[in-house]
Length: 380
Image (cartoon, rainbow, N blue to C red; front, side):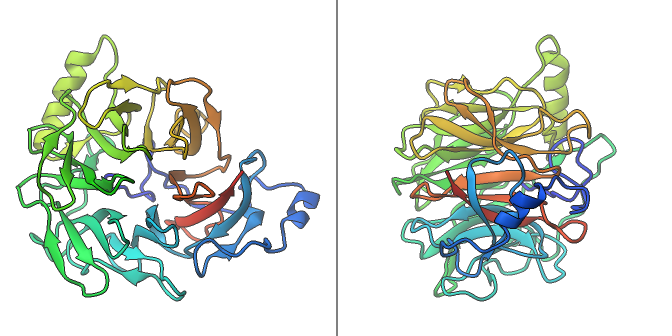
């Protein structure tokens, strides 16, 4: 989860690709015609638009496809409510300079703003009962967006120390901070059990996973290895965490770890080499799931907790890592499967609570540069 500008020229993690339908893969005429009519199913999110014509050849797990947003810059990280009837997401909308938190409406209409418009926000998630949302924001320290990241040392992410995690009541607008310690606190998600949340923090001096109760108390550190550990989600039974982690190159650990520490001192991290990991919520039984190279991120458990869906650019040689697709893999690292086949960015997958739908962000079908929208596929 971490702040991600999909439209940046990403040789390493997100895509600056300008979605050009004329160059994207398309099905043959017969297949396109067969998908031109709207599916008989009702849209899984109120207001979503049927777009089966954007299902690419080879995307055999997608029975039908809906577009949730349109013409939105950087709509990303859309996560389901516990009831499975709404999404909460971050996006740059209405000419704003940086990302805001929004939800889809329960009864149609436009996206509903959650954050107050100050600072920059990231990583939102519904709380149990769907009456409130947690998200990270810098608004306690700044009104405007933070300065753009200096890319002179290559592609890096900013881990703003001004980020804190907030919970906001959607009906009353009442908001309170769950974290107040100086340093990066963000990327919070909630266990399906509804008892704890996991988030990424620098409070130990490194980017580690922590858990806490839903009030922000009973803090427990999960990971303790040097390197960025983040973007974590609980398994459906609450027994495991899946997350992305820095993968240092064998034989080059000393050099790469020194660079990592130097960057982190300036609140930056390089995301170009990350692998998918799992561990227990107490940090035990940690093991590596992928060994693919490049950038692997945004993992989420399948409904049966036996497989993991995630985004990766490890397969892309033609565009130097600009093309991200969704993949699936068993929790033991076997049976890697490519899920999406679009020419540009696909990322941030999440299954609905009932397992029928997959929400994800994609450049597919965009009409202008920087357009990344939320989609929902009926899973088969």
